[in-house]
Image (cartoon, rainbow, N blue to C red; front, side, top):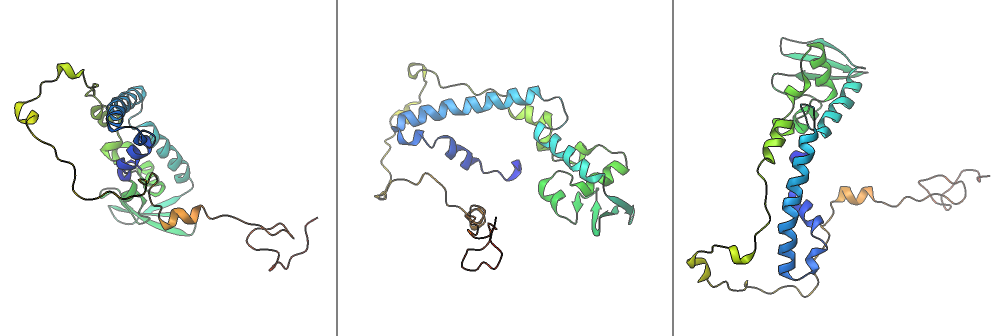
Amino acid sequence: MVMTLNIAESINSSNKHARDMPIMRVLEFMTNLIPQWNYHSRKKAMKSSTALSKKYDKLIGVNLLVAQKMTLKPATDKLYTVFEGVKRNIVCLEDGICSCGRFQMDEVPCPHALAVIKLNKLTPADYCSFYYRRNHILATYETPVYPILDESTWVIPREVLEKVVLPPKGRRNATRPRKKRLQSSSEKAKKKRKFSCSVCGQDGHSRKTCGNPPKD
């Protein structure tokens, strides 16, 4: 989700190839990259015609389809009990809380909260984070980011020109800089190689431990 996205990882993945170039070329690449991002994001936000951005408006639609299969009953004036089959969840719209945890974590109404919102004939967008609303996204990118002008037009203060910049202290590692971030254990588990038995063709075991009849 946007609220937990690491902007440093986005920048690192974008300048991965540029990092092999000389430092001046890398700086030039970055000064061109940021205005491009700002322009495309503003253009995308201006095309949106919904109260939320396209991504979260679609997420609300998906959650509404799931909410149609749920039944609910008021527990108190503020709390509602939502039944999803045999499972039961408690929703409080006033505090933006659901016992499933998705409402407060994603800052978008979960299916249980949407079932309560639909029952009370309320607007789902009013219960989303204001960061996901179209007017807030437009305000984020309303200030244009211009590329750096020619060096001959720069106005540099005298104290900056006279300042001596020394190289950083310490030694750099002898190996090449890492281009890929260290993966967590959960990401490594997703990429675990699947194997199947050559005797029966089923997954999860090998021919040494197979007790099934051979495949045709």
